[in-house]
Length: 406
Ligand code: FEO
Image (cartoon, rainbow, N blue to C red; front, side, top):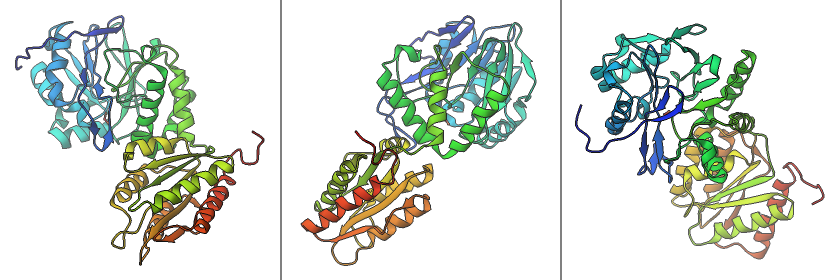
């Protein structure tokens, strides 16, 4: 083990269960997801007859984790390591930790064993977590539940059923660096925004699996009083609040919010966006204009999580959509938002392909297209802008709450 000049302390989360993770204050981009508030890589140490480490941390933070473990006990005393998720922010330091600790067992799901082989050649060191059975740690017993595609094929939950303690890997997490370890210590508006942003950017493509998993947990009679995710704070008070939010976000029920994503070359597409927004508002919808000059792809995804409509505008440039739109729409399409009403618009000079390209993308996203998109040559006239307002009104009429008294 290299010598780290800094020393770090473990934090006891529950009697005999310590947080031994790492705080990454500098992280600003997590594979394309903007993380302006940094993140944590959480690992947990259960001190029992069999000392057990749940997950590890991203490779550059290995010494921070080992330092925190060392504040409780000598890392070589670890008997079991559980790998709930093979992505490298949780396993980057696993190979060296295994080499150093020489644990009796490394436990992962069947797909996790395969992934750990394919990443690090560790397959022969991994035991497959027994589903429906427990592994005794002494006083405590650990159970496992595969959560395939939430959000990787290998993902699984570990839990201590008798105490209602869930180690949920990425689930119920958020990218939020903090010295506070518990959700109830974080301001609500930050907590809610970062949890929603995490769901929108990581879990949204698997929303149907989220709903099935929540049903499965309920049917199995499992309830959790404490949720310990692999990023962000621990939910120790009323974890039902985040479970309910997950169910709501996964259902993607349409709302009266209409997100308008656009970029502009000489201001014409921006004028159209504003006029469409006015039409939406006049029709009782809640327009949210997201100019891509100041909105990144993961903020756009977060806005769409709670929207009923997605309108997309781009000028035509060299027979294509603007590169900013190409970036964001490729990203959003991959996230598979559902139940959206859609429309496209944009200005052009001579060829005007952008609206058709955007409509194809919205179609691939299974958005319900209200009408043919609006194209404006060079600069919108007052009549063009009126037509944009009319389109906004037509979209508003398809959203919940239309026509209700305000
Ligand atoms: Fe936090 Fe999917 O890794």
